[in-house]
Amino acid sequence: IYSALFLTFLVSGSSAQVAPSPVIAQVGTDVILPVRYTGDFFSLVWYREPRTSDSSYRIGLLDPNGNYFPGPQSTGREEILPNRSLVLTNYTGNYTVTILAASTVPAETTELKVYKPISKPTISSNDSTPMEFNDTVTLTCFASGIDISYQWWRDNQPVSSSGRWFLCNNNQTLTISKILRTDNGPYTCNSSNAISTNSSDKFFLNIRYGPELPKISISPNSTELSVGSAILFSCVADSNPPATFTWFLNNMSLNENGQNLTITKIQQNNTGNYSCQAFNSDT
Ligand SMILES: *[C@@H]1O[C@H](CO)[C@@H](O)[C@H](O)[C@H]1NC(C)=O
Ligand SMILES: *[C@@H]1O[C@H](CO)[C@@H](O)[C@H](O)[C@H]1NC(C)=O
Ligand SMILES: *[C@@H]1O[C@H](CO)[C@@H](O)[C@H](O)[C@H]1NC(C)=O
Ligand SMILES: *[C@@H]1O[C@H](CO)[C@@H](O)[C@H](O)[C@H]1NC(C)=O
Ligand SMILES: *[C@@H]1O[C@H](CO)[C@@H](O)[C@H](O)[C@H]1NC(C)=O
Ligand SMILES: *[C@@H]1O[C@H](CO)[C@@H](O)[C@H](O)[C@H]1NC(C)=O
Ligand SMILES: *[C@@H]1O[C@H](CO)[C@@H](O)[C@H](O)[C@H]1NC(C)=O
Ligand SMILES: *[C@@H]1O[C@H](CO)[C@@H](O)[C@H](O)[C@H]1NC(C)=O
Ligand SMILES: *[C@@H]1O[C@H](CO)[C@@H](O)[C@H](O)[C@H]1NC(C)=O
Ligand SMILES: *[C@@H]1O[C@H](CO)[C@@H](O)[C@H](O)[C@H]1NC(C)=O
Ligand SMILES: *[C@@H]1O[C@H](CO)[C@@H](O)[C@H](O)[C@H]1NC(C)=O
Ligand SMILES: *[C@@H]1O[C@H](CO)[C@@H](O)[C@H](O)[C@H]1NC(C)=O
Image 1 (tube, rainbow, N blue to C red):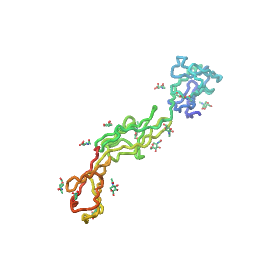
Image 2: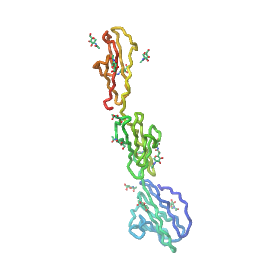
Image 3: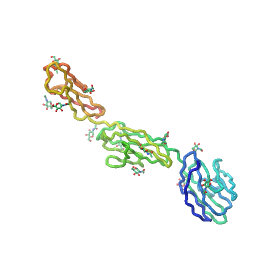
Image 4: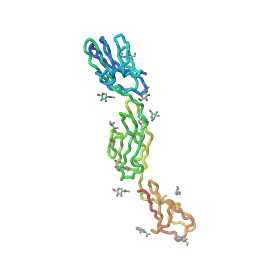
């Protein structure tokens, strides 16, 4: 596979032109570093790195008849084509071409950057159970490699810095201050390099909150009931983790701790004001 390069060439007898830096390629593919030079020459040499004074950096030499002679830096995988372009694989670095001709031709250097397809990023939080209103949470997106850019999504909507939301570290971290229960997610992030993009799994925050003011519902819903009938009181208070409850009759604790209080056979002494209190073990 050859990477396609589109170039506009200057036509000039005494100058050579190479692809603008950087040339991007994927690991394992062959790359062509093209050279445009229209004049005659005695020899054309490609170097690894811009060290043209040192022949040990030579990859190879092309003679005017189009014959290729490997140099000390040749790994056997390179070749200089008769049209002077260098074919190589898999090595990030700077490559320099020099042309020896009747008139001076300046050396030209181009940078090749070889990338692996980006790994799947992972999201981590510095606080696995933040508390609503109080805590600031930092989410980090991580993928291995170089030259990575990151982007955040919440509920499939792109995230940008505003209000309590703050992107930093080149968008690798997302900080959410004074977290709310509605900030639970799902969060995803994308990691991208020059050749590919990958997406994280969904990430949810477990935000502790509540309990809200508890509400009692009664079944059957009636304030007057006959002796011997049954009644169920149910206490509801929004909370994470779920609330625990304590029941009171006329402000006296009933030693009942469930969400529901059931009286199967109502007696005279069950008359009174029922109330419940909700507790969250964490908040
Ligand atoms: C490309 O480079 C990597 C890391 O240097 C190496 O593991 C891999 O074998 C190379 N692939 C080819 C096709 O040369
Ligand atoms: C040189 O030859 C290769 C292989 O035929 C081709 O892909 C490349 O575009 C050529 N380069 C130039 C500068 O003509
Ligand atoms: C290539 O050269 C540029 C400019 O001098 C430099 O910034 C870069 O680090 C070099 N790349 C490599 C892989 O050596
Ligand atoms: C994302 O990366 C994983 C490995 O980290 C790979 O298996 C998967 O194919 C990649 N997905 C894309 C769309 O590149
Ligand atoms: C998480 O990071 C934020 C921002 O740096 C900080 O305010 C918060 O205290 C950290 N939380 C924990 C549990 O370390
Ligand atoms: C949350 O913050 C408020 C105001 O700063 C404080 O009064 C309260 O004690 C904090 N709650 C916890 C559980 O730390
Ligand atoms: C960070 O993300 C914002 C919003 O998505 C974007 O405008 C900005 O260019 C990104 N910055 C970097 C360094 O990637
Ligand atoms: C980035 O992530 C979003 C949401 O996870 C996904 O829909 C989108 O396709 C990703 N973008 C790219 C270029 O992979
Ligand atoms: C119970 O009945 C009262 C009065 O009829 C009504 O206002 C209330 O909404 C009812 N509660 C439930 C939980 O049905
Ligand atoms: C229960 O306590 C509350 C507040 O302490 C008080 O206002 C109310 O009158 C008390 N109710 C009974 C039946 O004692
Ligand atoms: C309490 O009663 C309600 C309504 O009957 C029921 O949905 C709920 O599951 C009960 N809760 C518990 C903890 O038994
Ligand atoms: C009501 O009286 C019965 C027996 O007379 C007793 O077992 C029960 O605990 C009493 N209930 C309350 C709420 O005091």
